[in-house]
Amino acid sequence: MASGMFDAVSVVVRGTILQLVTPDEMRGRVAAVNTMFVSSSNELGDFESGVMAHWLGTIRAIIVGGCLTLGVVSLTAAKAKELRLFDYKKYA
Image 1 (cartoon, one colour):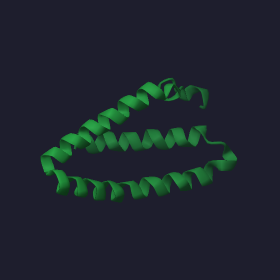
Image 2 (cartoon, rainbow, N blue to C red):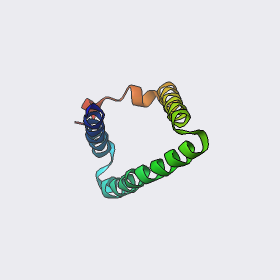
Image 3 (cartoon, rainbow, N blue to C red):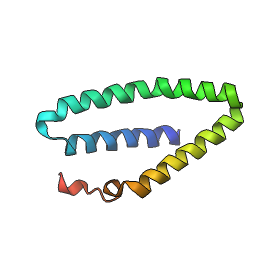
């Protein structure tokens, strides 16, 4: 239940930021591309998870997936200073 709640908050925050930082004349196109990627990500993720579970076994696939996720988050946090310093007040 908590995971679903946090995911819903994440979706709202990302959607709000997307609308705030996109110029008016590009908003529709940016929203369309974003929707296409978000809509297909679940299916691609399900496929990838199934393949990994088949190859590695369920437990190993979960551990590898978790480690890869933490690695990507750490790398993004280290490399994307803009995201860490994002100030929504500048756009409000």
